[in-house]
Length: 228
Length: 165
Image (tube, rainbow over all chains, first blue to last red; front, top):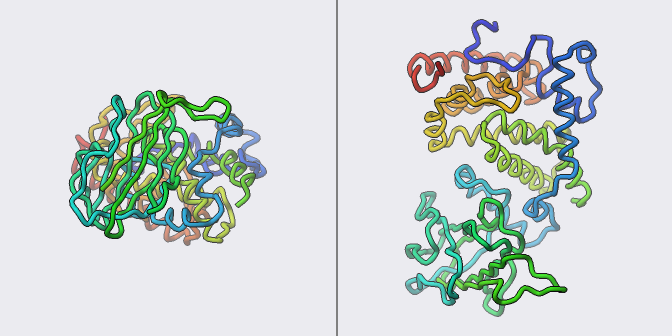
């Protein structure tokens, strides 16, 4: 059958083990008889074992830890991730947590309430009724938003390595994401506008993570508050 | 879920999951993202109180489906089409027809593409695929035959865009 195959197959010989079979051996399944006498399979198995060993100390991403964290509001919201599957193809992210915020009854105020000199331009991608309303658009240039719009925020590469995103719950700001800037810049938080009222988000960007021993100075951080 | 279990599953399977994604999509950065997404799906699965019989097989199937979804994305298909140069693998052993295979996988029925991805990217035989997907071997054979027929039609219809000299 090999001469009729439209594409090549990676097995050096028909007797050789598939990648899946070799992966299982690398993970601890007892090896087959063929493996003992096949230099090619042994070589590939050595490579797979080396790769597995190298991953033994890989740091577990924060987004994954969040996904596995105890249940609560975050979990219920994160299950909305499916709505963002198409975005994930263009903008891969490890996780998304939906934050329900309010949409304005009045026209949006496009500019942030606070924008210190030298702050970063925050980008947003917005989806409405399954179609893209804006993609990687500076937040202060977004079109008017309405109930049902879904938004993701991105921090472009720059000097800011640490991010804190908070949402106004009517009484105080609540934390929704705190941690290092994701490598691709996309915050693992999805925002869905659900009801009338005012939406307020506060974003704090710092050069490094604040610590109790050495609190980050104001000069090291910029804070922006967005209201719609 | 215990943090220890999360770390153990992640570290134990990361190389396999990432490698699987890498073979299908070609791009290491995309493969990394897809691998992370696969672990997210696993965490969600556990959070819903479900337990898989075989975690390795679960992750292997999930990352395969995520990678195939990536190939099916229309914008991505255009990008693949523009990749007219063969992609050398790290060890130089990847066949040069992978971009064409990716292009075809993005255009055929998903259950046919799934079987073909196991068969052509990882060299699984039909029995292995049947066991992994819990589908009769005869069904796997039929899907593979349909994939081959579809692939040949596409290759004949668009030789310049799908084939490599």
